[in-house]
Length: 457
Ligand SMILES: Nc1nc2c(c(=O)[nH]1)N[C@H]1C(S)=C(S)[C@@H](COP(=O)(O)O)O[C@H]1N2
Ligand SMILES: [Mo]
Image 1 (cartoon, helix red, strand yellow):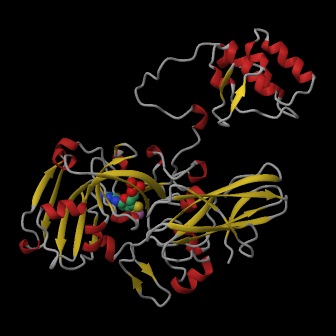
Image 2 (cartoon, helix red, strand yellow):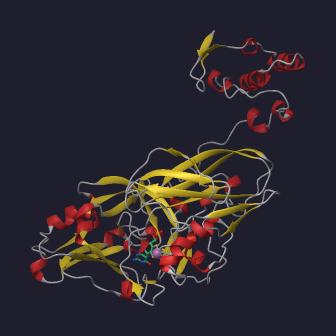
Image 3 (cartoon, protein in one colour):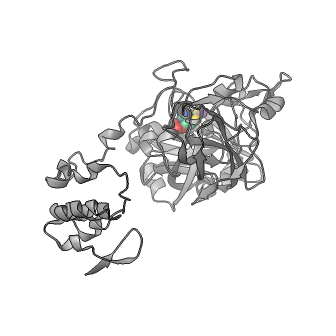
């Protein structure tokens, strides 16, 4: 009898024990005889006992030598009847994953409405942030807005800037030709505490104000075209949110006509209320504040608006005392998420060092990783898909010899820009900034395996 091994893609002969009613006994016998593949046979015996399929029976071969003998003790879930389909209608993570949560930083003032929750980057894989773990930033709390009452208005600051201003319902917007794209949203203040040499303990709090999702919506260009925007006079747009924060942001018309989206979908379903349900702006590559949530109005103007969120907030205080304004693009950046601050390596040996990289200007071209604080660098593997203005996952093999180390990652984007060391960035931008820290992050690994946040270079 032949059947397919789904893991190796090879056709294999079924082991004898698969056909045996006395599989478990045979396994024990094989173990005494020191057969290397007895664990696979044990799976076979267990699987047939529980009535499982031959495919499961061909699961991962595990070498026997020194293997955990518990593999031979069948747990209840292999012998009994499982639960029926989940009755709550919307799935939840395993109870064993309940520590994977968005959290408020212990280093920031805890308030109920003007708040931030950080994504648990240390627990995530790949490039997509599960919607329930997307970081949150609210200037005046969030609302679960009724879509049937929600409206979006497009108008000109002067009638000459837009021929036919319009008010859209959600139904009207969702009938339009839509696109789905993966993009990150990163708060301009992500990693902001590090400017002042404050070593925030974990990657959740140093970098957890970035998330990446597949967003679905209509290009803003489609709406602007529909309303007859005058692209000769119209130089900027103002995006306005429907929450009490009076959130308004200026966006250059070139971006508005390029890849800016008016989105309702996030990771295959409607936006979550805390992320702007039912409608938000998404300005790919720009600091998060430009992606106005609960979007209610787009105005076309002929000059920047200098609203409170661009004249008083979201400005960078430079060493010479001047402010840098409208610096909205999130420059190329990366961080190692495993291992990272607060984690502990169990012993020396092999580790898959993993992290994320992104650039507000395009795709990630390369990520280098150093284990000695930036003296030597090795190129990491970039895992696909590599998408523009989205998170890219990188991995690199490492054999830890048990001695202290300093782990760093350095990303290079499609424009050739290289992520800078923190002190190089400080030379240009000083130490008084809050926003736009895209410096290389260093994790110190002690001989006892403890990982902590340090500033190097
Ligand atoms: N209307 C409105 N839009 C908003 C905000 C807000 O408070 N109100 N916060 C902004 C900020 S500062 C950021 S970083 C992002 C955060 O998006 P998220 O909460 O979906 O992660 O939304 C932006 N859009
Ligand atoms: Mo933000």
